[in-house]
View 1: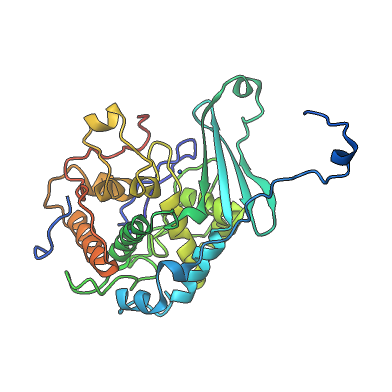
View 2: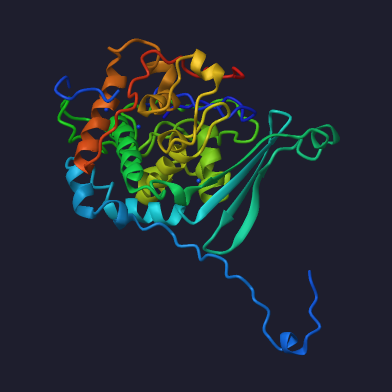
Length: 349
């Protein structure tokens, strides 16, 4: 996932990364009371709902996981996916943006009950910034990953998520759909994937090439993921290799990317559950709900608006259809992004 962040004034994720055969058809949420008897009664306090972290085994079993990824690297275990799924489900973030490019991120950890500001840009408290209303405020609740009320919808989302990570990490024969999760990092590790970034500057000597199921790339993305997942951007900026050695963290980066909107892009999660709906400007650019829109989010500049024969786009679609079948669901929505205009870095849409 090479979603370059040259400057976090824009959370633009562009990537060369790449996270579905002809035999599979394309599937195009005070009144006082002085009565003494009432005074003796205990005041009724409504109970708040108790948060329960999502349980991975309700979504997919270890047997199913192993069958879907039979050639996977031994690094990628079901137990690691399960732990990532359940631990990241304890986290939610609130992102507020002032004056287009000034950000604050508040991270809440339900396991400790604590909230903390993990990012606040230097201009946040400037008078000119304070006078401006937030351009946007949104929350990301990672417990909602494949965990909405509709079980069928959850399976579709899981199929889409698996399709992308399988495509990103595959290393076997075309159209067998057995070769997902084979690579821990991209084949060519000579490139450092460093870009200018005010909030998430690179650490000398470190490389930020694609790692993990979604092949997280570039220092800006490592820093932002560190803030959201771990509450400290320095952890991944200083230790990018952690994604290669900690399988739980590796899966967390993939779920984080799937769930977190970008500056001008919705999250893949919101697309798959139907929360995102195209505005007039989106419709004019051919963007529509469905799996195809998730391709546009992940790697649109490389794969979208290039016709129906783009290899990588078709591979993602075929993987998606394969996983849908394995999970016992279907999808009649648009799977292709062949006529969708991609999001361009630095372009305000």
